[in-house]
Image 1 (cartoon, rainbow, N blue to C red):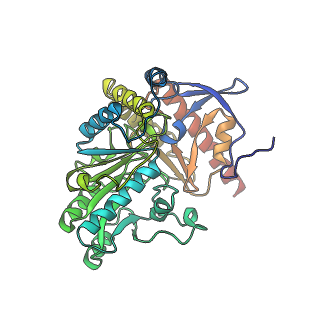
Image 2: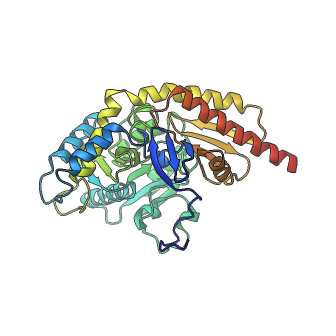
Length: 396
């Protein structure tokens, strides 16, 4: 069938019609185990009753008024998120890219208010911050940036987890105003930094008067076993961005700030038409309440720890498995060669996975997994990886 859609995607040959928890059903009635959660979006799984109820009730009342007027649900959501994160204020938008755009604009305005004419932001190679021109320019992946030049200036790149490089910039570039990094690089291959990395960045930013800005678009909302990934490190960011799991499928992003960063924006500096309307805020509030009431991040942390152990045990003797990484419900199985074909092989086995950075099997299961579903994901993924490895060994 011909498509009137622009060729921005190469969709797999399946169409899903309904979902329930960790499962999806296609148009032919086949059932699939979802180990991707819409790329870390459906943290509560599909068709979660609390989210569905909130959306249905709000849709019958009011969808949108614009930010020209006070939106009580937006105020309530801001209060909940700032309380959980220890932040002061929130700005709501429609996506992770927009949340990061807000953070970038905030950092630049912060720099100008300090008298810096050409404020610069330090970013990391291997990062992913979005596909708008500014967030694309901040993204540390040449392949994704290629073809969209000229890019937005004002970004300095260093290797992820390289403190010496950060300190070298601090010594040599007086125009730096902020650091923007992911607590865990998701698109970059589920790369975890050393335990001392974020605390050292916090110290460096304090010494230099920089803003520490954390992109938690993928890691936030319980994904790593805590409500926010920075909570594993014992530090506080100045700015944090959220999206994906915040709405469980409803498009909403947020930029949270504290201290001096929270007062940078004033009326007229930044805005959005749809961001934070009553409908999306009702969904996000249902997500936050469900995560809190059922302590889902902590529950997921325990289950994920066992999954990680099982992956390492079952794949310990598998050839061509280079590394197995994880934090909460965020797993990366790195192979020694490109393994993109595993996505289709998994689909044929009624399992949804992702391959990123060319050779990393990325798994982002919903936080509501049962133990049986968790075991089944481990079993199916290990079977796929073992078969793939065996084929490679035979070919050699």
